[in-house]
Image (cartoon, rainbow, N blue to C red; front, side, top):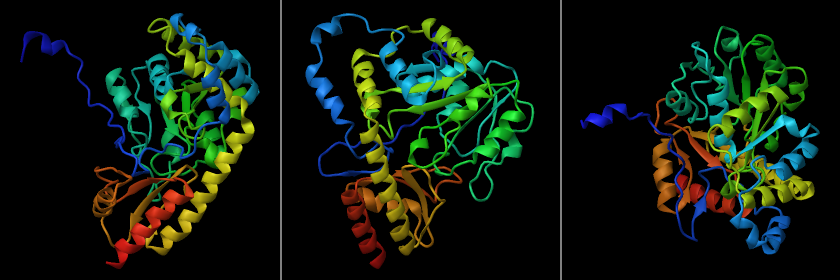
Length: 352
């Protein structure tokens, strides 16, 4: 070891989903929206003034923040925006989880949580899901340094009822509770109304899933003004200009087109429910997802075998080679045409 190496901060990094390249593939592995963003985005791109790029963007992203505030009927000082929800969540970890007590999040959940905890030297504990992959609210009724979990959870897609979320908040008035609602728009009930009652509640959402803007990296948090101010103070102590100008401009247009947003969601939910039917007919089992993916296992064939067979046909799904998950595949809901290709292959595969 070189002398300086002992001072390097070492962490086990988050491993993102594979990003295969090519035009003749079916990409169902990273939960992207299969439909393009609002037509207002294309219009705004054509009208974008290149001269504006030589100047720094608005560090407060006021245009986007204001549009989000109108859409969610909150005040602009209740919204924080960042470069994807990962940036927002990472900033929230850094801002709020500074107790010596361990923070809590489920053992099966978004795998970036332990990475941030290790990076920022935050102690943590991971209560196990129940046998049906559900979060047990009682596991969060104890002393801790903060709580975070997705709703719906990932990679299971299961929703926690709002009454259970209320109970967790009632038992934890002294710490910040973060609910990661990356998939909330696909059929689950948001905890957003609770921010008026619980000042320690932070809701985090993203443009990457339901709003078809994964490539622009836009995420946001909604909460009490004191929480938002604390996050902003940390942000301005680290990197003031996190949101680039195209993201601000195009993100604003996406929020404005509510009709297109709802139309796209409706199509994805319809395809998801139809997919559940034929997946069951093929022998798959899965929790009742309220997200834009299914978390499936097969009664007879190992998940890794199915994963490799699909990949051989340029159909990409997500396989987690990890104890407790290694018999499951996470399959993003694509277009009807993409899901038809998946179905035809699986029907042929299980006949062999």
